[in-house]
Image (cartoon, rainbow, N blue to C red; front, side, top):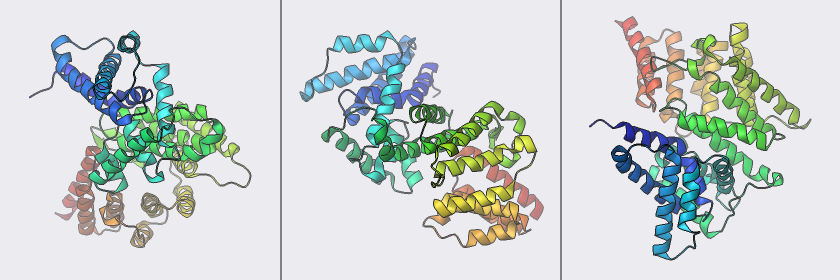
Length: 409
C-alpha cells in the first residue's frame, strides 16, 4: 500500500524534529522516557489525523501540542507530577514553530546527557538517541553491541537523569571540559551515521549543532576542530553520490565541492591551532580535520598528497588509535607506497571485530586488485559487500565485483 503525502510528511517531520521536540518536552520535568512516550503518541495521532484533515501549517507545533497534552493527561492519571495549566501549554505550542527555545533546550539536553553523574560509556549513545534521533539499533551497530544491551543501557541512563534530578541547563564555561568531549563525539557520530543514509536530516542537524557549539565555546580548539572536520565533509555533499552510487573522495568531481565552506573550514582549523597552548598536541578531531583539509586541497592543486595523508594518519594512530584509523592508514599507505605495503599493514592490524569491519575487506580488495590478484580481490569485495550497511556503498562494491569478474571471464 502506497503512503499518502500526509503520512510521508509526518515521517519526514518525525526524523527532522525528533531531537528538538524531545528536548523541549523533557526540559520541564526531567523525564526523558515520558517525553518519548508522549511524542510517540503524537506521531501516531499525526499518521491518523493528517491524512483525514490535512497537514497543519506548523506541523512541529502541532506535534508539540499533542505531545504536551498526552504528557499532561498521563501525569494527571499517575498523580506524579504537577504540570502548568494545559491551556497555556497549548497556546505556547500553537503560537509558533519552536525556534530560539528549541535550540536552547537541545543544548541543555546535550549537556544533561554528558553530566558526570551519567556513566561515561553511555553519554554519547544517550545523546545520539535523545537529541539526534538515532534508533537504539543504529547506535548498537556503531558500538558493536547487541541492540537489547544498548537499549537497556539507554533506559537506565534516562532513569538516572530523572532520579538524580540533573538540571536541564547549559553549564557555565568552566564545566565544558568535563562534558564537551562526549558532546562532540555524539554530534560527529550522528553526522557519520546519517551521511549516506536517508535524506540526511540527522547529518544536517549535526552540522548545525557543530556550528552552534563552535559559537558557544570559541576558545575550545577541539570544538573548532570538529566544526572544521564536519565542514570539510559537508562541502563534498553534492559530489558524494552518482546515480545513487558512492563516489570515493579521490574520484569526486571537485567542481561540485562547496569552495566557500572549504575556505571556512580551513579558517576554523587554523583558528583551532592558535587556541592550543604551546605544549599541547592537537586533538582527534583537529587531526581528522587536517586529513580532510589535505583531500580538500585537491580542488586547488589537482592532486592528492598521499605522503601528507600517510604522515597525518601515523600521528592519528599514535595519539588516538582505532580500528577505523588503522584501516584508513593502510589505504593511504597503499596509495603512497604501493598496494603491497598497504596489504602488509592490513595484515598486522589487531582489533576485535576486524573480520566484521566492512572497510577492512574493501581496502584489502583494493590492494589485491592492484596487485593483479583478481580472484582474491573479488572474494574480498564480496565479503565487504555482505557487511555493507548502506545502499550507496553496496552499489559501489557490487560494481567493483562486476568489473573484476569481467576481467576473470
